[in-house]
Length: 191
Image (cartoon, rainbow, N blue to C red; front, side):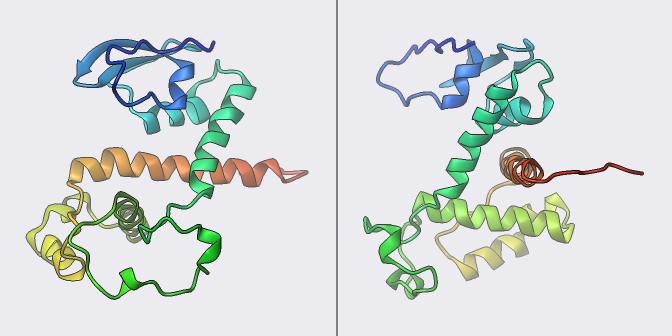
């Protein structure tokens, strides 16, 4: 069950580890392929990493438990190793979590990828926890608010917010829940 995906572009970006559990189909868009689960044969067009990980962890009934645990571990390690938000090459052990950095006091002309991802995570949590309607992200006043707070941040559109970011956050929460339940004993489910 560890079939390697075909690579039509040998100089392109390497495939994510989740592709070990999926068969790569035809190309649906430049660099995006159909993914077929090797355990249950469910097809995803295109195969997005977060959707494929969520399928293995939560939805695929035919996948081995060892594979499910391996995918949970992949998601967990990606979550545990926080990105370096300062953009410097210093190790995170050298900077205390509460230490203020120079980046907090000036607005850089470009926003590094890790910082944008951090803002996007906070944004999806705010929308979900506060019950905000998804179309609010495209409202001109909301866009103006983001530009006032961080001029070099471009908020995601509604489609990205509900598809990519929401699925990734659900995946992170599922993995945390599975890890909490794994350490518990004598649990009883009731109505």
